[in-house]
Image (tube, rainbow, N blue to C red; front, side, top):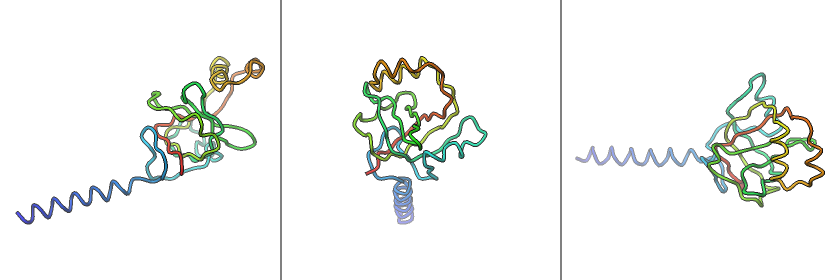
Length: 155
């Protein structure tokens, strides 16, 4: 009986220790959150993708803007004024609309894609861009987009 109790206690302690070890980032978590693993900067996404069309990865970056309709997508800064479009897997969660300027870590899939003019205009409308800015969108955009299954807003 002592061995059974001792074995159960060891298993429970091991389980709790392992579960604590999976938390990698302190902050407010959305979706599945972000577990430990190699994290890249937004500037390194293209290099990490290499010749692949799609790759699973974790990325850290600064939020430039969030969809002001309901928080259903956001843009992260890359470099030279460029941004990375981030949406959320199956629209399972949304981001607060007031997190521009905050650092986040996202976990999901980066993908090379051509975004249609229609989609680009829709995103611009959701971002509350002016009619003039929306009218300037006339060509599809070849870009890397990110589908996040989890996000952590860093403290």
